Length: 80
Image (cartoon, rainbow, N blue to C red):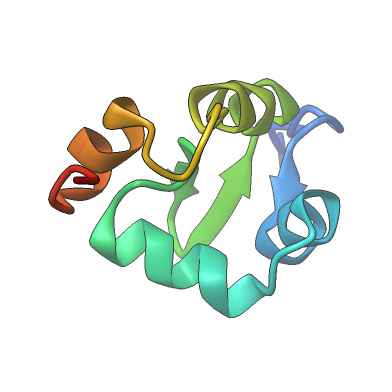
């Protein structure tokens, strides 16, 4: 039987959460709501590429809590 070997760089939800300093439940919630890192769905498995985690971290950089980009991405009202 031929089996496709997955790249060793793909991370499980637990491994991705550990790298990000988040709980696996938080990553699961972000998958449902949106706004989390890109993921790969293979059957019932959810996997993350390290590059996707890095892109997500970069996309979430902020200069202040009133950062307009942050407010636009989350749907919150801008700071007064």
